[in-house]
Length: 295
Image (cartoon, rainbow, N blue to C red; front, side, top):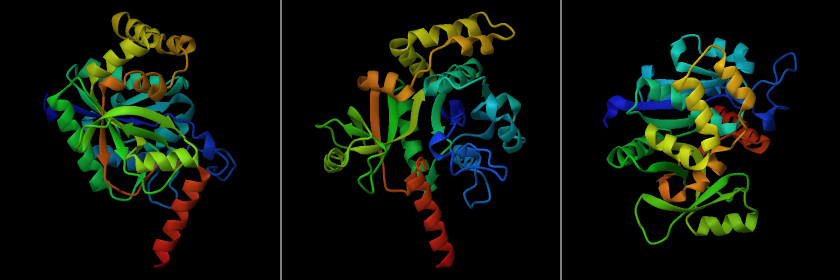
């Protein structure tokens, strides 16, 4: 495996419901947060696309979007190769949201190594995150049977993030995963911080074949119809029919957390990372921008 097979998948099909009261256009219509600028020149989706472009060439950056958001992404992605824009007919959870672009990438490059990047992150120090992603790519290239999750070094006790606890007995930047803890209470979050746990960024690197294998192990009921209808026996209208039938599944809970023995955790140094996923975090981000402009 070489850099010639490195791809980035940008996840941009989310609905952003937690911020819908704050992300509305002039008519009062909720705008998914990845299409909001929040005081910057470009929308969040472009922050993620720029992040992907620092890792993989533009012809190997694939973005998954939602059909219901067409009015926004057609405007934002007008300069991209249409073949690199994968459209979900409807939301069926993050597992399908990753599997659909993954199948698209593997049909074009069976040797692909993929970097998965959500489109709703803010990062103050992009160079630090990019350096960590490249290190994860190196690990996966050396051992394609591993999936490397990027864990953010916590800057505070936060009860709204998922946390990942590394396994004891192995030192270094990359360590095995012990367990996941979703949105712990303040006491547990403080204990996790002291134990060296990291925030789950949902940024990860893996060979495409390894990801398919994880789906086969954990969600065969989702993988099988995808492969049958989109790869083995494709036909017009197959994608719409598929999305009518498949269940909604969560990738983190139902794929990653079911296969901890396959996972490694790479610690990302403090880099000013946030997913801007709650009104409180978004408010803090906007306040910081006001302060920095007035300084």
